[in-house]
Image (cartoon, rainbow, N blue to C red; front, side):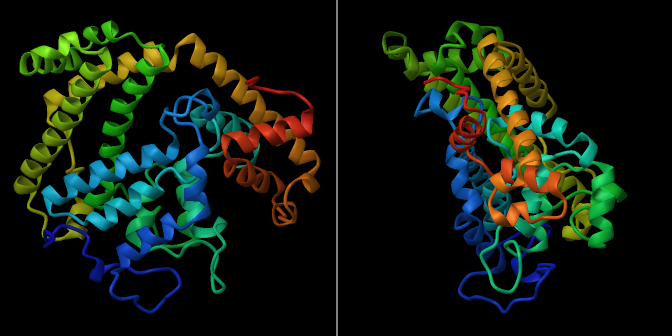
Length: 379
């Protein structure tokens, strides 16, 4: 049973290309299935989250990150009587447009495209599901419902929003022009994404040796949860350190999800939106409580300083940037080096960006070595 303010699949705004129903699945289940079977989804297994794929087998990738976001979002959606299948579809698709090498690749590709419309990974995720996936005879893309597409487009510059709105009036970019909000399901995935990457980046940072467990004592939220774990399980102090870390992170995720559900439930009771359209006209309703939001912000600041700006990460970032820039230049000058369908596109810079953005880390490295004769990341 869904709440009145949830996105009910039988009230969907529909697909750009009308298709008959596919029972027993509803429209949002159908979206999720199309995403899972897409080529772009499979590529996420070899795309960087923080650590480049070859650095270790157990670090998160874009695929495992997306699965964690989907799991957290579904749990919270169930507690709030929101559309579980819709939040899962949005979560599984939200990073489909990410480049190889994580944010380093994205920033490099944006710089390459500065004079050609720029590059935004959220916009690219929508482009993947609207155009670049080519699996069906009657249309390009996956032909997803409006609600899933709306959730995928998490951020969008005004210029790009105006371009999308001109091509599709009233489409998923409209809210960036009129100041309205997305569905509660989309709002929920945004915060589940934040919970997931904050927790798993701590885990991967400690696993890599770039973060020392003792450093986490400087973060009040983590320090408090660590103390609670030791009080509940005194024997943890004598066990391998990773057990204490796992228990602390488990408590971190639970605390954040519980607070998210509680604060959102309070906001929904106070606002009492009549339906999903009222949600879109309201301020954001999915939220953390102010105390937890402040603690989470402090934790993210710590990770930014201690992990994301760590010299080893910075060194990897610079080499990744060079790979993307040199790939872009090579394909721009020699389009025949790309597959025929990309080489034939009239807008060559955008075709090059599409091709590079779809690459996995290891394919990008192989292509870079093939085209330049150099090994960017010696194993």
